[in-house]
Image (cartoon, rainbow, N blue to C red; front, side):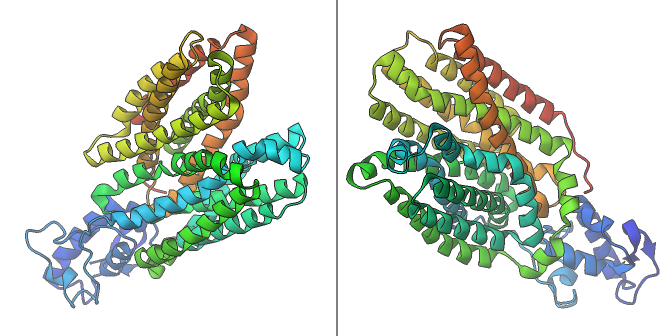
Amino acid sequence: MCFGERGQTCAPCADCANPEAARITAQIQLLVAVENPMLLESVTEPRCLRAVAAEAMGLGVPLGDNCGGSEPDPIIHGSRFNGMRPMRQADTSWVKVSVLIGAGAAVALHVGKVPAALPVLQSELGLSLVQSGWVVAIFSVVAACVAVFLGTVSDRFGHLPVAMAGMVLTALAGVAGALASSGNILLVTRVFEGFGFILTTTSIPPLIMKAASQSQRQASLALWGMYMPVGSGLMMALSAPLLYYFDWRILWWVASGLVLLAALPVYSVGARISDGSSLAAARPAIARTLKTALRRGPLLLSVTFAVYAGNYMVLAGFLPLLLVDLNGFSPMMAATASAVIVLFNALGNGISGWLHNYGLRYSTLIPIGCLGMAVGGGLVFAPELSGLWRMVAAAGFCGFAGLVPSSLFSEAPNRIPHPSFLATVSGLLVQGAAIGQLLMPPLAAAAVAWYGSWSAGITFMVIGSGFIAFCAFVLSRTADPVHA
């Protein structure tokens, strides 16, 4: 049984004329159509169905141990099937998944190194207030402009090579920043750090998919959401003691060194889970990946991520000011407390991954997270709250908030026709988050200034959390087209 364009059958070939082979290939056609209909659509000339099934298995389409029968198929799993290797479902390698998440956390160190060092940078390098703002915000600016396009680069040229290039670029730019003698030079190095950060964080999710078994891919991708709070929060917490004994450059050296250190196991893991031939066959054209990313489902994921990231940035950014203005904390104590509280977001992401492993989905977890964000965020902005309870409320907000990004990352593969599009959609999520981080804090500040009290933030938190839950509801009612 052979087929041509869009699965049309043609005259049987010698191999497929065998009745047993015809039965097996019919089963394979059904499985390929269900698991990867894009593959059938891509056929431009009559080909043996066995060849397409072989290509499907090379791309990771799980045809199973028996392809629908009760016994293992001798044609698929034996030498008669053109030397095709069995694709038995392997267990998830959590060590490999942890290594890949660690790579994301390593590049996220470069996000958390700046806030505590900013006063020293202003005095030593003569940074103006405007330059200081750009040094802090440049990652978000770069991501808001080009993240989805850098994701297409990863899908087109290979996830492992692009991830490695991103990590090396981040580390080298960090080294250059440590040697900077002026604010302008430091700002340029931050731009390159931003590009490396995005290349890395859009390329890692597809590698995590390859390292995870099919039944645990969503849980593994949910855990990927930990990378940002772990990396940035850890660096923020370590910044104060490091700056006490050393100058600001130590933060740049430490972050760059850890990225290079993390790159070695990432390369080893990536080389083991990547199949060069299947990757080459699966790489889509850039225009096609962009078309896939700009569908309703991925766009809704991005909008939801934008509002979440903006809401989170409002609370994380204003929390030190609230602790200083309303509770009398010293600036250093407020900054340290805020850094520790950020780590609760990593805990929320981890719990979300565990819950995904037991079958809970975004449609359940995001509303729960939004409820916690609304209550915790509202309490944080309550003027009469004590410092201790304000920190408890902030920790609760961050923990419940962790259910949101993890759920969005885990849902991304369900909105694409093939894993070869995942880096592009990850880039779209990163781009949405960056846009939210840039737009929502100024809006919240304007609301507080207009109202004349921090309590305006309560309304902002409740509305933002409600909108995230609404987006999740709309997403659950949105079905994306199957074909790319």
